[in-house]
Image 1: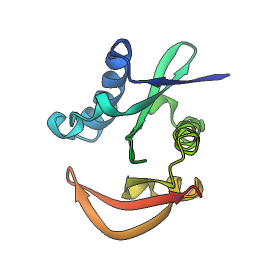
Image 2: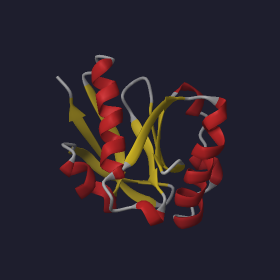
Image 3: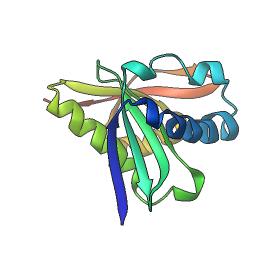
Amino acid sequence: MHNLTIVAFDRKNQPHIRAIRDAVFIHEQNIDPELEFDGLDNAAMHVLVAVDDQYVGTGRMLDDGHIGRIAILRDFRGRGLGGRMVQALVDEAVSRGYPRVYLGAQKQAIGFYARLGFIPFGEEFMEAGIPHLSMEKPLV
């Protein structure tokens, strides 16, 4: 059974969040750490996914409904954890009365987000050397 833990940013969770993002974004995708850790974490609501008491995934949502930094450790992908994590963020956005959530999806993740009800908008753009597409999910 997967234990999905939703936490507001708390200094005690920072090492877990950072370790997951280091593994996925910095080591796997070769993203510059200065781009990855953008100073917005303190203002964000974070989700951590735990499997058997091991943190294996993280994501965040800013106060304007911007979802980002969705990351699942390689050995735990394909188990539905990412979808549950994004849905937890969407549920939180609904509870806060946000009219929509939005994100910048890496090109290879567009299908994943589309299956969760996100709709593309705008033109493709590059971020950290990776092609992205803006996507949104209306909540009202």
